[in-house]
Structures are given as structure tokens and as C-alpha cells.
Image (cartoon, rainbow, N blue to C red; front, side, top):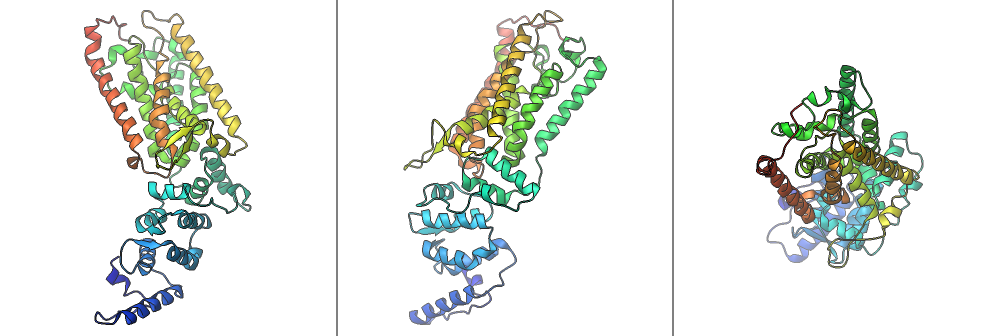
Length: 431
């Protein structure tokens, strides 16, 4: 709100325009004193903190000194979550300029942490000295689950506390669960229809479905995405489900359905397009492209450590403090299970691709979609998952990888339109 409106708040009084500087200073001091003794605040949280900030910023410059900022927190900090108060105090201690920007303050209060705010935290003169989130007692089952997810997926204590205070289970992690349920339903439907649940790909009805990608039917654009709902057998579905639920659900709880959906869909599309370019005669089935994008992005985020040097440019070092920072008793087990599932599933896919097909000359489904998902995860996925509290549009590396990915998609589309005829590829007959 504007400065004129804040001067009409309760406990303040208007200063005449022709008053002397001494009178104005005295009146301003009385305003601050009255404010500090006032317990009733405006109903809207944003208006409440804007009003408080304006009282400490009489010149309406958008900045207040760190000393005044600490006074504000000392007076009204009891209204904040204790973890959020710790972060604000760290911001005050770590700001080398001696002043706090209002926009950073608003971003913090609305759970939108800016790049400058995060740098101020990471480069602060002290670390957060409060007790570890792991040491807190008296938590309910839902709070213990959120704490467990925080330690599974977030490397920094300040991020874990921030996530712990902000997460509300609304909305729940619905995306990965919905995709998994749909995959199981489709598998069961075709399993009963073909009367086969193991190596369904050997059934003559398998590729007649409108879902799998087939090179002869590549003009049907939906197949580049819908192939994820078909699996070669229960062994294929089980491995993908294990990785999808083991890694995807915790990631969605932290990063949200939008970011996880972006990585997943980009991995799925990259998988089918990669097959259409490198393994031109093979069909594609299974959700491995999206699953491998999520798992490889998470593993890379755990292994690589983001470091903020003096020039504020982000680099990665190895070995990782992210790995040691993510202190969870099930971390090693979960990562080991993910790696085992990835290795077994990829080995199964390679074996199946070169196994004599049941209906030559059409080969068995390709394994190259796995590699397309891994590339997406190690590039676009790492940037998306690296800092969950930052907006993607504020990260230049995200736009670089996104533009490269878009260029790849466009090139692959033109390849599918022109290359098959120019190279005179002899495709298998349609199913």
C-alpha cells in the first residue's frame, strides 16, 4: 500500500506538511514506538507486512537497514513459523550491503524465494544455528513423513526446514500416482484380452493397440506419448512402477506436479523421438523414457554439489556434499534399489530388442528410449530439480537446456517427415 495509507494505520498520526524537521522526527519516532506496542495487525498477511515494512522505511525507498529489520523481527517474529524466523535472521546477518530489499522480503513471506535471497542465505556470515530438523520431537505421523521426504530429497538444512514449514499435502502427489494407476489399468485390460501377462509383446494383438509407437504409424502424433501405457509384460511394468513410485512420488511432494510433469513428459517425448531417429524400424512401448529422466535427474542432483563462488555463478564440484547432506537412513537403500531396477530393466530391454521377434520382419521394441530419458534427466531435469524454491524462469541454465531440447524436437520432427523417404527405409508392415 502507499505511504499515505500506512500513515492512517491505527496508532499513528498525520504530520503537518509545514512542521519542522525536529517535530517530524519526533512524530516518526512516536509512530514506531506505537507500532511496536500494537498487537492487532491487518488481516491480510501481505498488507500486514507491507505496513510494517513501510513504517521502518519512511522514505519509501524499498529498503530498510538490517538493524531496523532485526527490530521488526524481534517485535513481530512470534507471528512467524520458527524455521522461517531463522531464515529471516540469517538473511539479516548475511547481507553485506547492510540493507534489506522489500521485494526479497515479500518473496520470502509468500514462499517465493528469489535468487538474491538465496545467495544472501548461502553467503551469510553464519549458518543457521537452530536445532536440526531431525532433532525435533513430538511430530505427528504426517509431519514425520514430510521430514523424511525432506531428508530424502533436499541437501541443505535451510531448504528442509523451509519445505517442512510450507508443505500442506494440498494438492497431494497425484500425478505420478495417476500415471501409475493408468498404466496398471491398461496392462490389466490387454492382459485379459490377450490372455497373457508375461511377454505380452509376443501376442499378435499387442501392436494392434492404438497406444504403442510404430514407425509405420508415426503420423499418428499421439503415439509419441501414449506408448508409455503399454508394457511388454508384467516384468517390464513392475520395474518401471518400482522406480516411478520409489523416486517419482517423493520428488513430486517436494517439487510439485508441474515440474515433475515437465521432466517426465520431456523424457517420454525424447525417448520416442530418439528411437525414430536412431532405431528407425523398431516400435516403442513402456514408460522408461519418463522414469529414467526422473531417476537420472535425481541421482545427478544428489551426486553433484552446487557451489556459489564469489562471482555468484553456479558451478558443480565432485565429490558431493549433497550426498552426505541428505541424511536419511533409507537414502542408500532407495538409491541402490533405483540403480538396480534401472540396470535390470535396461538389460532386459537390450536383450529383448535383439531377441528373435515373434512376428518378423517387425523387430521387438527398442531400448533407445531409455537413453533419451537419461539425457533429458542429466540436462533439463537437473536444472529443474536443483533448487526447488527458485522459479524456473529466473534460471538462465534452464532456458539454455530448454531451447536445446526444443531444437532437438523440431529436428526430430523434420527427420520423421522427410528422412524415411529420402533414405528409402524399408519399414515393417503396419500391425
